[in-house]
Length: 81
Image 1: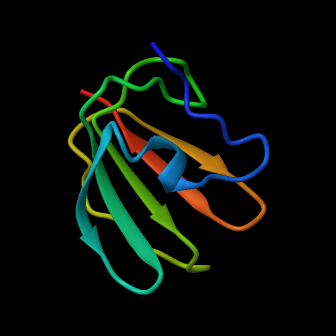
Image 2: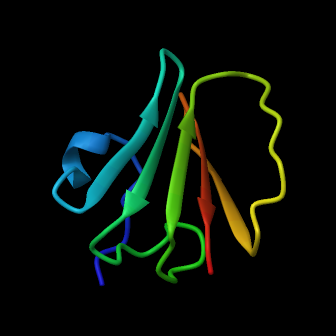
């Protein structure tokens, strides 16, 4: 299982073959993990990935465990089953 590499930031284009775009606006992107990529925080497969450049975000109940990963430019929220 390939782990998302965020050591030098996160570029969705590096993983576009296995991530499905669900929603996108100017500052946020939500993707589904179709290829079973591993979470950069815990190493387990994740279900969805939320990427944002916004400084403040409000989240509802993600429905299960989640991980947060911070790059220099973005915050990644990864939800698990």
